Length: 85
Length: 401
Figure 1 (cartoon, each protein chain N blue to C red):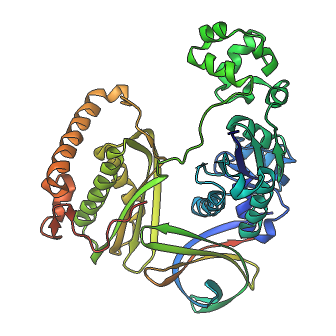
Figure 2: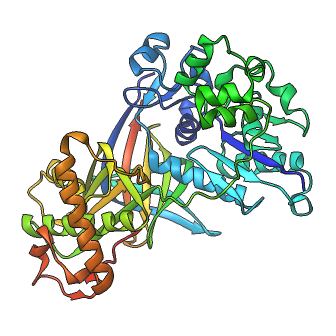
Figure 3: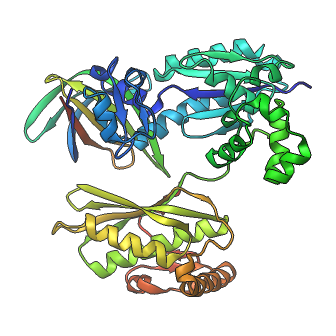
Protein backbone atom coordinates (compact mmCIF):
# COMPACT_ATOMS: atom_id res chain seq x y z
CA UNK A 1 0.00 0.00 0.00
CA UNK A 2 1.51 3.30 -1.07
CA UNK A 3 1.05 6.28 1.19
CA UNK A 4 2.24 9.78 0.51
CA UNK A 5 2.68 12.48 3.14
CA UNK A 6 2.55 16.06 1.97
CA UNK A 7 3.88 18.67 4.40
CA UNK A 8 1.58 21.69 4.21
CA UNK A 9 2.18 23.96 7.23
CA UNK A 10 -0.54 26.51 6.37
CA UNK A 11 -2.96 28.38 8.63
CA UNK A 12 -6.53 27.20 8.10
CA UNK A 13 -9.98 28.13 9.35
CA UNK A 14 -11.36 25.46 11.63
CA UNK A 15 -14.73 24.99 13.23
CA UNK A 16 -14.24 23.10 16.48
CA UNK A 17 -16.10 21.95 19.52
CA UNK A 18 -14.64 23.00 22.89
CA UNK A 19 -16.43 20.98 25.54
CA UNK A 20 -15.54 19.08 28.66
CA UNK A 21 -11.98 20.36 28.59
CA UNK A 22 -11.41 18.82 25.17
CA UNK A 23 -11.05 20.25 21.69
CA UNK A 24 -12.61 18.44 18.75
CA UNK A 25 -12.14 19.83 15.23
CA UNK A 26 -15.33 19.39 13.20
CA UNK A 27 -14.49 20.87 9.80
CA UNK A 28 -11.87 23.10 8.22
CA UNK A 29 -11.48 25.27 5.16
CA UNK A 30 -8.41 25.37 2.98
CA UNK A 31 -7.97 27.13 -0.35
CA UNK A 32 -11.70 27.85 -0.50
CA UNK A 33 -12.70 24.23 0.02
CA UNK A 34 -14.35 22.92 3.16
CA UNK A 35 -13.47 19.51 4.56
CA UNK A 36 -15.55 17.61 7.08
CA UNK A 37 -13.78 15.72 9.85
CA UNK A 38 -15.20 12.19 9.93
CA UNK A 39 -13.09 10.87 12.82
CA UNK A 40 -10.47 12.20 15.20
CA UNK A 41 -7.95 9.35 15.20
CA UNK A 42 -5.51 10.63 17.80
CA UNK A 43 -4.59 13.79 19.67
CA UNK A 44 -1.50 14.90 21.55
CA UNK A 45 0.22 18.04 22.84
CA UNK A 46 3.67 19.48 22.61
CA UNK A 47 4.92 22.33 24.76
CA UNK A 48 7.52 24.95 23.95
CA UNK A 49 7.85 27.27 26.91
CA UNK A 50 4.52 29.06 27.23
CA UNK A 51 3.22 27.79 23.93
CA UNK A 52 1.18 24.59 23.72
CA UNK A 53 0.44 23.02 20.36
CA UNK A 54 -2.61 20.72 20.36
CA UNK A 55 -2.26 18.19 17.55
CA UNK A 56 -5.06 16.20 15.94
CA UNK A 57 -4.86 13.43 13.41
CA UNK A 58 -8.21 13.39 11.60
CA UNK A 59 -9.78 11.47 8.73
CA UNK A 60 -11.75 13.67 6.36
CA UNK A 61 -14.54 12.83 3.93
CA UNK A 62 -12.16 11.83 1.15
CA UNK A 63 -10.50 9.25 3.40
CA UNK A 64 -7.29 11.23 3.58
CA UNK A 65 -5.72 11.71 7.00
CA UNK A 66 -4.87 15.29 7.95
CA UNK A 67 -2.76 16.47 10.83
CA UNK A 68 -4.03 19.74 12.33
CA UNK A 69 -2.70 21.67 15.26
CA UNK A 70 -3.92 24.58 17.37
CA UNK A 71 -1.40 27.07 18.68
CA UNK A 72 -2.77 28.31 22.01
CA UNK A 73 -0.47 31.34 22.11
CA UNK A 74 -1.30 32.72 18.65
CA UNK A 75 -4.84 31.21 18.71
CA UNK A 76 -4.32 29.97 15.16
CA UNK A 77 -5.14 26.60 13.59
CA UNK A 78 -2.63 25.06 11.21
CA UNK A 79 -2.79 22.26 8.71
CA UNK A 80 0.48 20.43 9.34
CA UNK A 81 0.30 17.63 6.75
CA UNK A 82 -1.96 15.42 4.66
CA UNK A 83 -1.47 11.68 4.22
CA UNK A 84 -2.98 10.28 1.05
CA UNK A 85 -3.29 6.64 0.04
CA UNK B 1 13.33 -3.63 52.44
CA UNK B 2 13.20 -5.76 49.29
CA UNK B 3 13.84 -3.86 46.10
CA UNK B 4 11.18 -3.98 43.42
CA UNK B 5 11.83 -2.54 39.99
CA UNK B 6 9.24 -2.24 37.24
CA UNK B 7 10.46 -1.94 33.66
CA UNK B 8 8.08 -0.76 30.94
CA UNK B 9 8.58 -0.93 27.18
CA UNK B 10 6.11 0.43 24.64
CA UNK B 11 5.50 -2.18 21.97
CA UNK B 12 6.67 -1.19 18.46
CA UNK B 13 6.33 2.36 19.70
CA UNK B 14 6.84 4.59 16.66
CA UNK B 15 4.93 2.25 14.37
CA UNK B 16 2.11 1.96 16.92
CA UNK B 17 1.74 5.74 17.11
CA UNK B 18 1.54 5.90 13.32
CA UNK B 19 -1.15 3.22 13.34
CA UNK B 20 -3.10 5.24 15.90
CA UNK B 21 -2.84 8.36 13.77
CA UNK B 22 -3.89 6.58 10.57
CA UNK B 23 -6.51 3.86 11.14
CA UNK B 24 -6.02 2.30 7.71
CA UNK B 25 -2.51 1.27 8.81
CA UNK B 26 -3.77 -0.83 11.72
CA UNK B 27 -3.06 -4.50 11.21
CA UNK B 28 -0.66 -3.70 8.35
CA UNK B 29 3.13 -3.91 8.14
CA UNK B 30 4.36 -0.40 9.00
CA UNK B 31 7.97 0.75 9.02
CA UNK B 32 9.21 4.04 10.45
CA UNK B 33 12.59 5.30 9.36
CA UNK B 34 14.65 6.90 6.66
CA UNK B 35 17.60 4.92 5.47
CA UNK B 36 17.17 2.28 8.11
CA UNK B 37 14.31 1.03 10.25
CA UNK B 38 13.81 2.91 13.51
CA UNK B 39 10.70 0.92 14.39
CA UNK B 40 8.39 -1.53 12.69
CA UNK B 41 5.01 -2.97 13.58
CA UNK B 42 4.65 -6.59 14.67
CA UNK B 43 2.89 -7.26 11.36
CA UNK B 44 6.12 -6.19 9.64
CA UNK B 45 8.27 -8.29 11.97
CA UNK B 46 6.54 -11.44 10.70
CA UNK B 47 8.34 -10.77 7.42
CA UNK B 48 11.69 -10.72 9.19
CA UNK B 49 11.96 -6.94 9.47
CA UNK B 50 13.67 -5.47 12.53
CA UNK B 51 15.10 -2.19 13.81
CA UNK B 52 18.42 -1.30 12.23
CA UNK B 53 17.68 -3.04 8.94
CA UNK B 54 18.05 -0.93 5.80
CA UNK B 55 14.82 0.29 4.23
CA UNK B 56 15.94 -1.17 0.93
CA UNK B 57 16.22 -4.63 2.44
CA UNK B 58 12.94 -4.13 4.28
CA UNK B 59 11.17 -3.41 0.99
CA UNK B 60 12.67 -6.55 -0.52
CA UNK B 61 11.45 -8.71 2.37
CA UNK B 62 8.07 -7.02 2.63
CA UNK B 63 7.03 -5.19 -0.55
CA UNK B 64 3.67 -4.32 1.01
CA UNK B 65 5.18 -2.47 3.97
CA UNK B 66 4.17 1.17 4.40
CA UNK B 67 7.29 3.21 5.05
CA UNK B 68 6.91 6.48 6.94
CA UNK B 69 9.60 9.06 7.79
CA UNK B 70 8.50 9.51 11.40
CA UNK B 71 7.06 12.23 13.60
CA UNK B 72 9.37 12.79 16.56
CA UNK B 73 7.15 15.39 18.18
CA UNK B 74 4.23 13.00 18.28
CA UNK B 75 6.38 10.19 19.68
CA UNK B 76 7.75 12.45 22.43
CA UNK B 77 4.25 13.63 23.31
CA UNK B 78 2.85 10.11 23.54
CA UNK B 79 5.89 8.97 25.49
CA UNK B 80 5.48 11.77 28.02
CA UNK B 81 1.84 10.84 28.57
CA UNK B 82 2.90 7.29 29.36
CA UNK B 83 5.69 8.44 31.66
CA UNK B 84 3.23 10.67 33.56
CA UNK B 85 1.22 7.52 34.27
CA UNK B 86 4.39 5.81 35.51
CA UNK B 87 5.02 8.76 37.86
CA UNK B 88 1.66 8.02 39.50
CA UNK B 89 3.25 4.79 40.75
CA UNK B 90 6.53 6.15 42.04
CA UNK B 91 8.55 9.37 42.14
CA UNK B 92 11.65 7.42 41.09
CA UNK B 93 11.12 7.04 37.36
CA UNK B 94 13.89 6.92 34.77
CA UNK B 95 12.69 7.44 31.23
CA UNK B 96 13.99 6.94 27.73
CA UNK B 97 12.19 7.43 24.45
CA UNK B 98 10.00 4.33 24.60
CA UNK B 99 10.85 2.72 27.93
CA UNK B 100 10.95 3.52 31.61
CA UNK B 101 12.15 2.09 34.90
CA UNK B 102 10.07 2.67 38.03
CA UNK B 103 11.39 1.93 41.49
CA UNK B 104 8.44 0.48 43.40
CA UNK B 105 10.46 -0.28 46.51
CA UNK B 106 8.45 0.70 49.58
CA UNK B 107 5.26 1.52 47.64
CA UNK B 108 3.28 -1.54 48.69
CA UNK B 109 0.89 0.54 50.76
CA UNK B 110 0.39 3.05 47.95
CA UNK B 111 0.12 0.69 44.97
CA UNK B 112 -0.73 -2.69 46.42
CA UNK B 113 1.27 -5.61 45.07
CA UNK B 114 3.57 -4.94 42.13
CA UNK B 115 1.85 -7.39 39.77
CA UNK B 116 -1.51 -5.68 40.30
CA UNK B 117 0.06 -2.25 39.90
CA UNK B 118 1.66 -3.35 36.63
CA UNK B 119 -1.62 -4.69 35.25
CA UNK B 120 -3.35 -1.46 36.12
CA UNK B 121 -0.56 0.60 34.55
CA UNK B 122 -0.83 -1.36 31.28
CA UNK B 123 -4.57 -0.92 31.32
CA UNK B 124 -4.38 2.82 31.89
CA UNK B 125 -1.80 3.24 29.14
CA UNK B 126 -4.08 1.48 26.69
CA UNK B 127 -7.14 3.44 27.80
CA UNK B 128 -5.50 6.86 27.75
CA UNK B 129 -3.15 6.55 24.78
CA UNK B 130 -4.25 3.51 22.77
CA UNK B 131 -0.76 2.03 23.06
CA UNK B 132 0.22 -1.39 24.35
CA UNK B 133 3.14 -1.92 26.70
CA UNK B 134 5.12 -4.85 28.05
CA UNK B 135 6.16 -4.83 31.68
CA UNK B 136 8.81 -6.71 33.63
CA UNK B 137 9.10 -6.84 37.42
CA UNK B 138 12.11 -8.04 39.36
CA UNK B 139 14.47 -7.22 42.18
CA UNK B 140 16.77 -5.17 39.93
CA UNK B 141 16.58 -3.29 36.65
CA UNK B 142 18.61 -5.76 34.62
CA UNK B 143 16.35 -8.70 35.43
CA UNK B 144 13.19 -6.58 35.10
CA UNK B 145 14.20 -5.62 31.59
CA UNK B 146 15.07 -9.16 30.58
CA UNK B 147 11.81 -10.38 32.08
CA UNK B 148 9.87 -7.96 29.87
CA UNK B 149 11.90 -8.98 26.82
CA UNK B 150 10.83 -12.59 27.27
CA UNK B 151 7.07 -11.84 27.16
CA UNK B 152 6.74 -9.18 24.43
CA UNK B 153 4.39 -7.92 23.11
CA UNK B 154 1.73 -6.76 25.56
CA UNK B 155 3.04 -9.07 28.26
CA UNK B 156 3.80 -9.04 31.97
CA UNK B 157 6.85 -10.94 33.21
CA UNK B 158 7.65 -11.35 36.89
CA UNK B 159 10.87 -12.86 38.24
CA UNK B 160 10.55 -13.60 41.93
CA UNK B 161 13.45 -12.74 44.26
CA UNK B 162 15.84 -15.68 44.47
CA UNK B 163 15.08 -17.01 41.00
CA UNK B 164 17.30 -14.58 39.07
CA UNK B 165 20.18 -17.04 38.56
CA UNK B 166 17.88 -19.74 37.21
CA UNK B 167 16.24 -17.22 34.88
CA UNK B 168 19.60 -16.19 33.41
CA UNK B 169 21.39 -19.51 33.10
CA UNK B 170 20.72 -20.46 29.44
CA UNK B 171 20.82 -16.93 28.05
CA UNK B 172 23.51 -15.64 25.71
CA UNK B 173 26.10 -13.33 27.29
CA UNK B 174 24.95 -10.57 24.93
CA UNK B 175 21.82 -10.30 27.07
CA UNK B 176 23.83 -8.83 29.94
CA UNK B 177 24.09 -5.02 29.95
CA UNK B 178 27.67 -4.04 29.34
CA UNK B 179 28.31 -6.84 26.85
CA UNK B 180 28.44 -5.30 23.38
CA UNK B 181 29.48 -7.13 20.24
CA UNK B 182 33.21 -6.56 20.89
CA UNK B 183 33.08 -8.01 24.40
CA UNK B 184 30.87 -10.87 23.20
CA UNK B 185 33.37 -11.67 20.44
CA UNK B 186 36.24 -11.63 22.92
CA UNK B 187 34.38 -13.94 25.27
CA UNK B 188 33.36 -16.23 22.42
CA UNK B 189 37.02 -16.77 21.57
CA UNK B 190 37.29 -18.24 25.05
CA UNK B 191 34.21 -20.39 24.44
CA UNK B 192 32.13 -18.22 26.74
CA UNK B 193 28.83 -17.82 24.92
CA UNK B 194 26.16 -18.19 27.59
CA UNK B 195 25.64 -16.77 31.04
CA UNK B 196 26.26 -20.26 32.44
CA UNK B 197 29.66 -20.30 30.67
CA UNK B 198 30.46 -16.87 32.11
CA UNK B 199 29.76 -18.05 35.64
CA UNK B 200 32.53 -20.61 35.30
CA UNK B 201 35.12 -17.87 34.85
CA UNK B 202 36.71 -16.74 38.14
CA UNK B 203 36.45 -13.08 39.11
CA UNK B 204 40.20 -12.44 38.88
CA UNK B 205 40.26 -13.81 35.33
CA UNK B 206 37.36 -11.60 34.24
CA UNK B 207 39.04 -8.60 35.84
CA UNK B 208 42.27 -9.35 34.05
CA UNK B 209 40.49 -9.79 30.74
CA UNK B 210 38.03 -6.89 30.92
CA UNK B 211 39.20 -4.59 33.72
CA UNK B 212 36.41 -3.01 35.79
CA UNK B 213 33.82 -4.44 33.42
CA UNK B 214 34.98 -7.89 34.48
CA UNK B 215 33.93 -7.18 38.07
CA UNK B 216 30.58 -5.86 36.90
CA UNK B 217 29.90 -8.88 34.69
CA UNK B 218 30.88 -11.25 37.49
CA UNK B 219 27.98 -9.82 39.49
CA UNK B 220 25.56 -9.52 36.60
CA UNK B 221 25.87 -13.09 35.40
CA UNK B 222 24.72 -14.06 38.87
CA UNK B 223 21.63 -11.87 38.59
CA UNK B 224 22.95 -8.99 40.65
CA UNK B 225 22.65 -5.37 39.53
CA UNK B 226 22.84 -2.53 42.02
CA UNK B 227 22.27 0.38 39.60
CA UNK B 228 19.63 2.75 40.95
CA UNK B 229 16.60 4.13 39.17
CA UNK B 230 16.89 7.91 38.94
CA UNK B 231 15.17 10.59 36.87
CA UNK B 232 17.54 11.78 34.18
CA UNK B 233 18.31 15.45 34.39
CA UNK B 234 19.55 15.91 30.87
CA UNK B 235 17.05 17.81 28.73
CA UNK B 236 16.23 16.21 25.41
CA UNK B 237 16.77 19.49 23.59
CA UNK B 238 17.43 23.15 24.19
CA UNK B 239 15.56 25.64 22.07
CA UNK B 240 15.64 29.40 21.74
CA UNK B 241 13.33 31.27 19.42
CA UNK B 242 11.70 34.65 19.18
CA UNK B 243 9.33 36.82 17.17
CA UNK B 244 10.68 39.99 15.59
CA UNK B 245 9.06 43.26 16.60
CA UNK B 246 8.28 43.74 12.91
CA UNK B 247 8.61 41.17 10.13
CA UNK B 248 11.99 41.64 8.54
CA UNK B 249 13.86 40.60 5.44
CA UNK B 250 17.12 42.18 6.65
CA UNK B 251 19.67 39.37 6.44
CA UNK B 252 21.99 41.07 8.92
CA UNK B 253 19.23 41.42 11.52
CA UNK B 254 18.02 37.84 11.03
CA UNK B 255 21.55 36.46 11.10
CA UNK B 256 22.30 38.53 14.18
CA UNK B 257 19.24 37.22 15.96
CA UNK B 258 20.05 33.63 15.02
CA UNK B 259 23.60 34.13 16.31
CA UNK B 260 22.29 35.58 19.58
CA UNK B 261 19.81 32.73 20.08
CA UNK B 262 22.50 30.16 19.32
CA UNK B 263 24.85 31.86 21.80
CA UNK B 264 22.20 31.70 24.53
CA UNK B 265 21.41 28.05 23.84
CA UNK B 266 25.10 27.10 23.74
CA UNK B 267 25.81 28.95 26.98
CA UNK B 268 22.94 27.06 28.60
CA UNK B 269 24.58 23.80 27.51
CA UNK B 270 27.98 24.80 28.89
CA UNK B 271 26.63 25.88 32.27
CA UNK B 272 25.17 22.41 32.70
CA UNK B 273 28.14 20.51 31.40
CA UNK B 274 26.29 19.39 28.28
CA UNK B 275 26.82 19.36 24.55
CA UNK B 276 24.63 18.75 21.54
CA UNK B 277 25.00 17.00 18.26
CA UNK B 278 22.05 18.16 16.18
CA UNK B 279 21.15 21.70 15.22
CA UNK B 280 17.66 22.58 13.98
CA UNK B 281 16.58 25.95 12.63
CA UNK B 282 12.96 26.98 12.31
CA UNK B 283 11.53 30.10 10.69
CA UNK B 284 8.07 31.58 10.25
CA UNK B 285 7.49 33.91 7.32
CA UNK B 286 5.38 37.06 7.58
CA UNK B 287 2.57 35.21 5.76
CA UNK B 288 2.68 32.65 8.63
CA UNK B 289 4.12 29.84 6.51
CA UNK B 290 6.92 28.00 8.27
CA UNK B 291 9.96 25.98 7.35
CA UNK B 292 12.54 24.04 9.28
CA UNK B 293 15.70 22.04 8.76
CA UNK B 294 18.15 20.18 10.91
CA UNK B 295 21.50 18.51 10.60
CA UNK B 296 23.69 16.39 12.84
CA UNK B 297 27.34 17.11 13.51
CA UNK B 298 29.98 14.41 13.43
CA UNK B 299 30.85 15.21 17.06
CA UNK B 300 28.78 16.80 19.81
CA UNK B 301 29.81 20.30 20.84
CA UNK B 302 28.85 23.30 22.96
CA UNK B 303 30.97 25.83 21.07
CA UNK B 304 29.10 28.84 19.66
CA UNK B 305 31.09 29.17 16.43
CA UNK B 306 30.60 25.52 15.46
CA UNK B 307 26.89 25.51 16.27
CA UNK B 308 26.27 28.84 14.56
CA UNK B 309 28.20 27.86 11.44
CA UNK B 310 25.72 25.02 10.99
CA UNK B 311 22.70 27.10 12.03
CA UNK B 312 23.58 29.77 9.47
CA UNK B 313 23.85 27.16 6.75
CA UNK B 314 20.49 25.69 7.74
CA UNK B 315 18.96 29.17 7.65
CA UNK B 316 20.14 29.57 4.07
CA UNK B 317 18.47 26.30 3.12
CA UNK B 318 15.09 27.12 4.69
CA UNK B 319 14.81 30.83 3.89
CA UNK B 320 14.46 30.76 0.15
CA UNK B 321 11.30 32.76 -0.40
CA UNK B 322 11.30 36.51 -0.95
CA UNK B 323 9.13 36.99 2.10
CA UNK B 324 10.25 38.56 5.37
CA UNK B 325 10.43 36.57 8.57
CA UNK B 326 8.44 37.08 11.72
CA UNK B 327 10.04 34.31 13.76
CA UNK B 328 13.35 32.54 13.91
CA UNK B 329 14.53 29.85 16.26
CA UNK B 330 17.28 27.36 16.92
CA UNK B 331 17.00 24.03 18.70
CA UNK B 332 19.96 21.96 19.88
CA UNK B 333 19.15 18.27 20.03
CA UNK B 334 20.82 14.96 20.93
CA UNK B 335 21.99 16.53 24.15
CA UNK B 336 24.46 14.56 26.22
CA UNK B 337 26.93 15.16 29.06
CA UNK B 338 30.03 16.84 27.71
CA UNK B 339 32.82 14.33 27.33
CA UNK B 340 36.24 15.54 28.48
CA UNK B 341 38.53 16.81 25.70
CA UNK B 342 36.19 15.86 22.87
CA UNK B 343 38.21 17.78 20.36
CA UNK B 344 38.51 16.82 16.75
CA UNK B 345 42.15 15.75 16.50
CA UNK B 346 42.50 17.34 13.09
CA UNK B 347 41.29 20.72 14.35
CA UNK B 348 42.82 20.61 17.79
CA UNK B 349 44.41 24.08 17.68
CA UNK B 350 41.26 25.73 16.34
CA UNK B 351 39.05 23.95 18.90
CA UNK B 352 41.34 25.01 21.71
CA UNK B 353 41.18 28.66 20.60
CA UNK B 354 37.40 28.56 20.36
CA UNK B 355 37.17 26.90 23.74
CA UNK B 356 39.32 29.60 25.33
CA UNK B 357 37.21 32.29 23.73
CA UNK B 358 33.86 30.96 24.96
CA UNK B 359 35.29 30.21 28.41
CA UNK B 360 36.49 33.81 28.60
CA UNK B 361 33.09 35.13 27.50
CA UNK B 362 31.30 32.89 29.98
CA UNK B 363 33.50 34.16 32.77
CA UNK B 364 32.76 37.82 31.98
CA UNK B 365 29.05 37.23 31.47
CA UNK B 366 28.59 35.21 34.63
CA UNK B 367 30.02 38.15 36.57
CA UNK B 368 28.62 41.16 34.72
CA UNK B 369 25.61 39.80 32.84
CA UNK B 370 25.18 38.51 29.31
CA UNK B 371 25.02 42.06 27.89
CA UNK B 372 28.54 42.83 29.16
CA UNK B 373 29.90 41.47 25.89
CA UNK B 374 28.18 41.53 22.50
CA UNK B 375 30.10 39.58 19.90
CA UNK B 376 29.86 38.34 16.36
CA UNK B 377 26.74 38.92 14.38
CA UNK B 378 24.84 39.88 17.53
CA UNK B 379 26.44 43.29 16.96
CA UNK B 380 23.81 43.85 14.25
CA UNK B 381 21.18 43.89 16.99
CA UNK B 382 22.77 46.85 18.79
CA UNK B 383 20.69 49.93 18.18
CA UNK B 384 17.79 47.75 17.02
CA UNK B 385 16.91 46.13 20.33
CA UNK B 386 17.05 47.41 23.86
CA UNK B 387 19.15 45.57 26.38
CA UNK B 388 19.15 44.86 30.05
CA UNK B 389 22.07 43.26 31.93
CA UNK B 390 20.79 39.81 31.03
CA UNK B 391 20.76 40.44 27.29
CA UNK B 392 18.62 41.84 24.50
CA UNK B 393 14.96 42.42 25.34
CA UNK B 394 13.08 40.25 22.89
CA UNK B 395 9.47 40.56 21.87
CA UNK B 396 8.71 37.05 23.04
CA UNK B 397 11.01 35.67 25.73
CA UNK B 398 13.32 32.96 24.46
CA UNK B 399 11.57 29.67 24.82
CA UNK B 400 13.37 27.07 26.80
CA UNK B 401 12.98 23.34 26.63
